[in-house]
Length: 461
Image 1 (cartoon, rainbow, N blue to C red):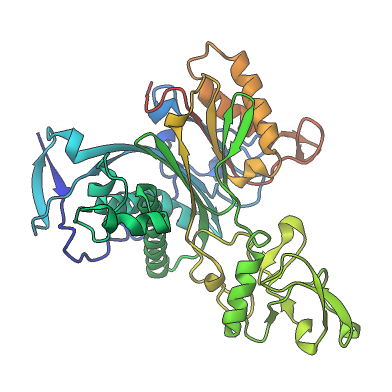
Image 2: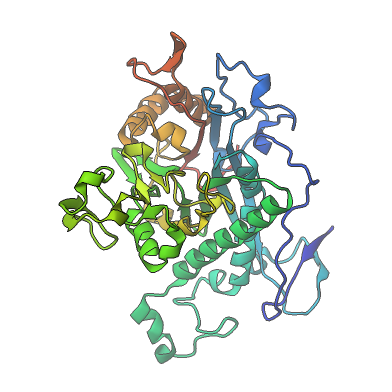
């Protein structure tokens, strides 16, 4: 049996991959493993009950992964989260200059293929379009970049990547640069993920422009291959490992608060991006006219602490980063500072584009599974910010331990756990509001949760 497969020489310059293959109109849908029809949207659901969706019993995800989701409490008309979970086969490319060749599926998979598993969560804003596109295309971008370096990642004896792709390091002196700059195989995998995010962001930008669409999304990706998790985070979704009595964060959130100094530094380097509307400085509160000429508290891009400066007329402008807590925004518009899309996001009633202050580049962390021993209750939790808005890492870890201990003999315990976490964060209707068990406000956002068991590495059921 044969299959048609794209094969390119690594020495041949390639044109960008096509942006999409779907028809011109954007079709709203839920994740493929939920088996819902393309037309089934939140408008067909009972908003008063906020039903939790999860894969049917006959649909088993890789690694026995559990998944559940729920739409928000009326924040938007549709669920803007998207999720994907799938195997990825990385193939060694041939070096012949042909666009298409036929390869037999029964090749020596030890040398020609690397099996990987991919999980992705995409939290859309300004509509679901960017999240849908990211769920369709980011794993293809990652696959393409990793296949570029197949000879490096597919060589178990490679201590460090060669200076020139396609060559082998000959002696110790040729690899001295790797030791000095701490370049290892993990480094080029991280680089491949970063490049893939950038290319996917470019594709999404082309798609949005050509379809007259707007919006963006955060992205949280976990890629497993060769015994390691590579976690790529661009946004405010979160991944943690719950193991025995420990909680290990695998990602950081990127918001206007956490990236204040980066944004201020860009404003310092390119003040024209601020127009006549904004100031790069941060103040504890908006500067008032009677503050001008007086020494007031401020922070600049190079400061983690606070200092005093003489207030000037220019400081009366709106700060580029301003707000309190979760209400902090970049240019008064957006809270998350990393993600995909948002190419046409503008400050209201101005011609100022916010995209330069947003980054599509993820932070990539590595978790080596082969260095650990895992039990049946050890899991990786991936979730959009709808969960973390109302539950801390410890809250989630405690819920995981208690639930899995009580459900030892349930075959679908990880899907049940995903549902349990979603319900805890969603809360229950009470007096026209949604509240948690303790009476506090429940999550107002979409919630999507993956539960990845760690004891059965690579297994399916």
